Image 1 (cartoon, rainbow, N blue to C red):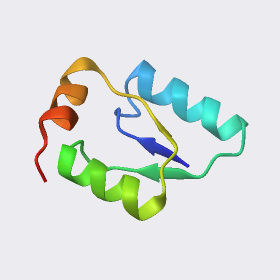
Image 2 (image 1 turned 45 degrees about the vertical axis):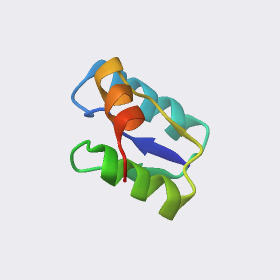
Image 3 (image 1 turned 180 degrees about the vertical axis):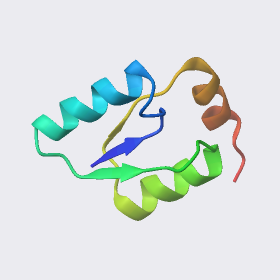
Image 4 (image 1 turned 90 degrees about the vertical axis):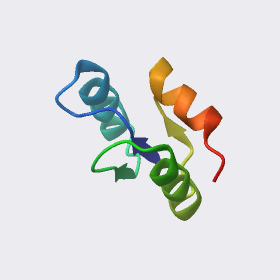
Length: 65
C-alpha cells in the first residue's frame, strides 16, 4: 500500500507512482501533504511504503498528534 506524499507533477512523485503501479500496489493519494493527514492515512489504509523529502520528514518527526 503506497502513500503518495510527493506531487505527481514532480519526478519523485511520478516515478515512484509508476514503479508502484508496475508491481500492482494499492495507491493512496493525498490531496496535499500534511504530517497529520499522512499519519491518518498510514493508520487508516495500513500504508507500507511512501517517500519523503527532508522537509516532510522533519514535519513527520516533529508532529505531536
